[in-house]
Amino acid sequence: MQVLYDVYARILRRQLAGLPIPRHIAIAMDGNRRWARRTGYDDVRIGHRFGAEHLELFLRWCSEAGVHCVTAWVASADNIRRRDSAEVDYLMQLTETVLAEHVRRDHRWRLHVAGQLDLLPDTTARALKEAVEETRDRTDAGDLTLAIGYSGRLEVVDAVRAVLDEAAAAGRSLEDVADELSEDVIGRHLYLPELPDPDLVIRTSGELRMSDFLLWQATRSEVEFCDLYWPAFRQVDLLRALRTYGRRRLERFS
Ligand code: IPE
Ligand code: MG
Image 1 (cartoon, helix red, strand yellow):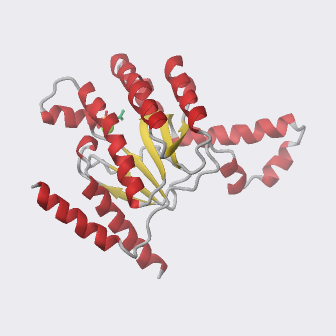
Image 2 (spheres, rainbow, N blue to C red):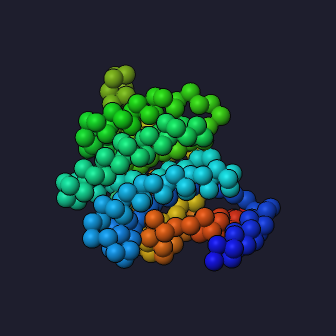
């Protein structure tokens, strides 16, 4: 089985030669709980643990494929507000002990965080901020953004609010602000204006929705939906998504 898998991966890699690759991939890691139940675990938290650890592999595959900008959706603002507190506590624990720790050790990535950090417990917000600080000077590293407590609509609301706050602080009139409002102005006030928009968004687990993920940034992205649950997502699935992406882009722009 492994032999066949390796052969398939090699074929896919060969097919990728000469195709455009995305500069930035955003991944909606969905299906942890269904994966746990289907695998025979009653405790869905085990799915979250496998899911968090799986990101490490995914990041390695991205690096190997030459993709050095990744946004990973860890939890939406709604997930944090609506799921039961034991599950959310565990997700936060994993964020501190698995995700933040991984980025500290893995020098291939510089960490960014997108989302409403005030929705998170203090310890989680602090662990993330410290990891962001610690990785800030990795000049040759890629950019990894963890979207956590994230809502795309709220990000746009926050951006507009930041524009208005700045204008108020500078004593400018509302008419001036309205006059100058543009995509660029809003874009510059998003959480991470320095990062490129995602070229490819992947969502696992067969859900065919964007669910408030990168609302502004993903308007022109290619989107790949994959039926596998996140912990079961393999390197060949990434390579296939890259092949589809490369072929679509080639067609669109040739
Ligand atoms: C994704 O898996 C992780 C989070 C959204 C926190 P889910 O927890 O959504 O698992 P399913 O989709 O219910 O299987
Ligand atoms: Mg889900």
